[in-house]
Length: 201
Image (cartoon, rainbow, N blue to C red; front, side, top):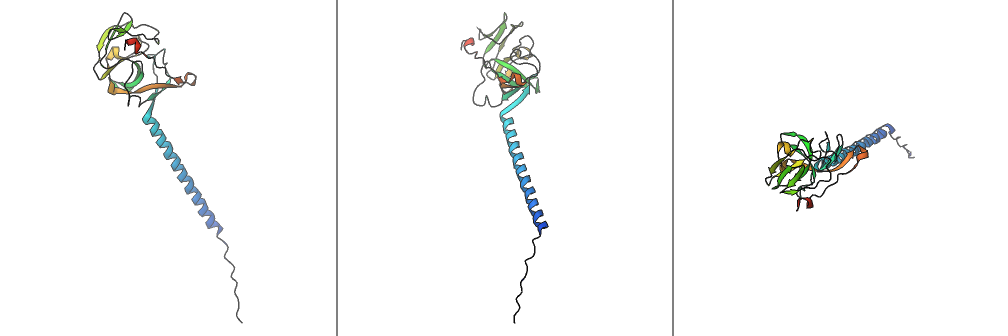
C-alpha cells in the first residue's frame, strides 16, 4: 500500500515581502523626487536664461520707477530687434561692470544728442518726453558711434547717466525692463513711450 503525502505549503515570509515593498516605494519616491528637482532646475535655468530680476535702487528713474521696486528684465528683447528710443533698459555700468543700472534710451547709434535750454534734442530736433517731472538743468552735446546709445534717468537732475560718464556701448546692455512685480500694489507692465515721432523720424 502506497502512502500519499500531502505537503502543506510554507507560509509566506511576510517580513521579507513587506521590506521589499517598502524599499521599492522608497526608491520610487526618490526617483520621483529626483525628476521633480531636475524639472525645477531646468525651469529655473530657462527662466534665468530669458529673464533677470533687479531691484531699483535710488530715485534716478522717478517718477517712472521708484526706489525698492523689483523689475523683470527681458534678456532676449534685443536678440532679434534693435534697441528703440524710449526703452527702459538694464545694463552693466561701464566704469564698474559688476554694477547694474537702469535708465531710459534717449539716443540711438549714430545720433547727435544735445541738451540745452531745459530740452533734449536728437539731431537738432526737440524730444517731447511726457514722463518728466522736471527739465534738465545741465547742457552738453554727444555724438554717438554706430555701437553706442545714450541713456538718461527720468529724474534728470538726480541721475548718474550718459550726461556724466558718456554714451553706453550697446554690448553692455543686459535687456529691456518690462514688468514691475514688487511691491504687489505696483504690479504692472512698464509703459513704453513711442518717441519716434517726437524726434522727427
